Image 1: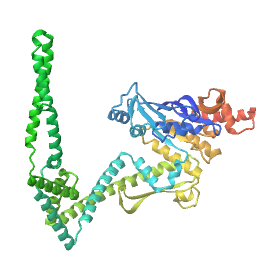
Image 2: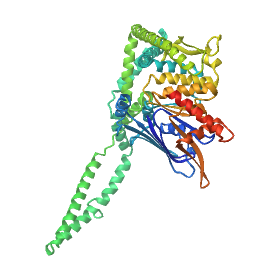
Image 3: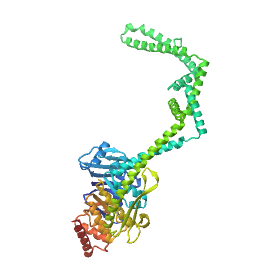
Image 4: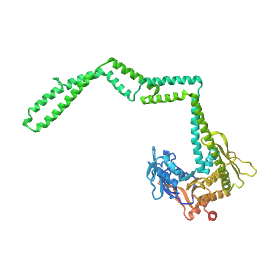
Amino acid sequence: MLVSLHVKNLALIEETEVEFGEGLNILTGETGAGKSILIGSVNLALGARFDKDMLRQGAESALVELMFTCPPEDGALRGKLQELDIPLEEDMVLISRRMQPGKNVFRINGESVAARQVREVAELLIDIHGQHEHQSLLHKKKHMEILDAYAGPAAQEALGLVEERYREAKRLREEMEENRLDSDALKRERELLAFEQQEIQDAHLTPGEDEVLEEEYRRMVNGKKIAEALGEAQMYAGNEDAGAGSALSRALRCMHGIVEYDRQLELLAQQLGQIDGLLSDFNRDMAQYQDSLTWDEQDFRQTEERLNLINRLKDKYGNTLEQILQAYEEKCQRLEKLADYDLYMQKLEQQYNKAQKALEQTCRKLTRIRRDSARTLTEALTQALRGLNFLTVQLQIQVQDGQGISAKGWDEVEFLISTNPGEAVKPLAQIASGGELSRIMLAIKTVLASRDDIDTLIFDEIDAGISGKTAWKVSEQLDKVAHAHQVICITHLPQIAAMADRHFVIEKDTKKDTTITRIRQLEGEENLQELGRLLGGDGMTDAVLGNAREMRQQALEHKH
């Protein structure tokens, strides 16, 4: 259950906190007061796109926090939190998002998480019905999603197996198509593979060989430059008259001649002796390196040719020796397959036929589940629709063979409806108005809510396009859902607002020449005042208040 919503520096909201309760939570307000900010805030906390224009003017960052309860019996939610390594404190889940241009920070119970992980947790906590979601009923794809959601774990398990087997059959079919060759193409590919295999094999490549050769080649190419530099270095550091070695030897003799007069000079003499020793080691090592600098034209040509060969192979088969050797293995495997091409294709076709048969078997199982569920869903939806003032409604959920198999099976699912006596059922897109679609979606949400474990349902203007008796029916249906789930509903109809267990109003106010939006819970007579405003009277007369009081009493009698 959603316990509280805390919003700071978002749009017209400076800072507000709303505490929701069980049952039916109703939010009303004047047009333009910012009712959509509530749904927007919740969606932002759950990962919706944030635009810098949403930030309150003058603020550097915005914050949205949602606090949910997590009862001990909610194993799915607790398992997901444990999977994400998120601690659970006092059976509560706090989802927060701090937003500023170019930066977003999501947290669950204080732990930084990705937006994807927030969505995974949110799917187990809340279901949001936006203002235009009912329009999705015009697309048959949505019909299949609704039926599969109603069918529950059995459908989900079968659907997962269909997707897995579909991918395997598709992979095998593509492999067959890619490898289907006529005799001439088969001969050409065999000859090319044999040539490439032999070309790599004849090179006798060793991993790391190219790096050693490149280093040796650089040394050979720059041998003259190296020799000249070493000669000059030897002149400066060696033991000739102008060299550092000769100068150090003379300095050391001078020090040895005076150390007997002062013990402190012994340390200086030792330091100079260490320098002399290091320089002698350097000169000896350099002389050995110079002796190794031999130029052999044949070695140079062989190194150059070897490098050219390796680079040609890299151009053809890969950027590294490891990739070339991997290409060699792949060509050997491919040649082995083509060595007995007919047998290879026969085995591949057998594997594909087996995979296709398994896929069709799973599709049949999924179809049976869908058709069984379609019958019970039709009954449940028809009952729910009659409760929403569709008194003569006829509903059919067709599950028919589609054109081919996809990752969703081979079915096409479509909802057909007739809302008037004597009319044949037709697709929703052909007959349903916006108000009717809204009620149909409410019926679907009502039926699905009885099947899932999501505690909180949010409806944003589910009452679009309805009034009068129909509005009362929608109100009663929302109250029915609220007996098993927490419902948060934004509405402009007094019939729905009258049914509230908790009634909140969203208001605009001016503070120091700045417009702010606030949300507060109504108490006592405030509830009747707001119902009177929704009734649309010219003023808050006794008659308007009397109508509001009568409407509230009618709602309370229904609730009890």
